[in-house]
Image (cartoon, rainbow, N blue to C red; front, side):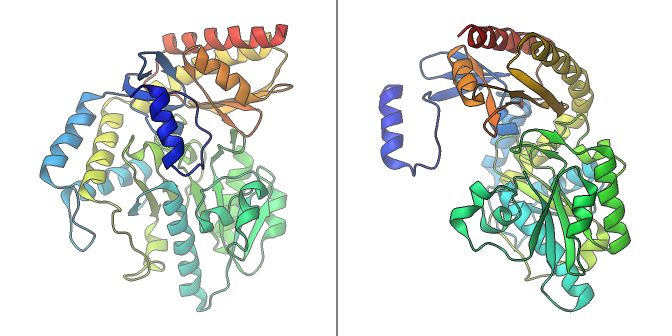
Length: 401
């Protein structure tokens, strides 16, 4: 079948929950993807921040092939070596103390919320605790994760959601203070808001939140699902600040394509939260996922990925600043590391994204008016130049239309 036939089959058989672009991708190499017609695309989306190592990394692929021939799954009734190794490496990278592997980022958020509520229950010997989340946030589409997602458009059809969630304004400390009650057990936030428009936490804000949490024995949950795993220039974005979460979530680039997530916590929280029988998963941390996590972290450490990100992200910042100065339709530029965004004024970002695809460039959006730049972490300056040249042509055409 040709690509049109495959796409027609997909539309007949798959639940229509995605508005997919009309291309059929077949394979990848480095920072490029190729469709079934042989067209080449420069990838500045990385599978929504997943494919940090790019495509076709032989060492990563060989590790997965080797594990396939050994053992795919055992359940969590038994130990397995890859998961043990993965837990050790993610602890080293994060400085956290305990790890629970999940299958996705949304599951990691669900587990983090449960852990915070159990901690408060153990401390207070009663339930009914509340969580503070942020307007503009995105934590996932399961009911618990959706309950702490600060976007009414995502939430409205699915109520009633988890009770006891209060929302504050991101980067406004007083707003958070106004939401704290005697029932507050946790504050959850993305260190860098992704879907909400690429907003990094301001230093005074996140450090003020951390102080509040210490003073009131409230747990700080930092969502690093999109902004973690080296993307900010540190292994986890909170390491750019003078903070440390009580609980953190990670996923996406944690497995670089293999579906895996995790939530991590300090020993203090672990001692008073989830106990045997409180939480579980059939697939989480199985040998195959463990092999993917372990190899990803080994390669990132060996190749000094965070140092590379700092260097190339500075160059990306400079080139995007040039676009902002050159084109009146670019209203703002913000972000951190290789997680940056251009806010457009007067034209939908989705239309620019579609035109980029026709020019062989994969870009995604955040909200309705932000172009989001989430390339594989292995990009070089030449790829930044290639991307900005294409985007400059598109924005110039838009300006003349």
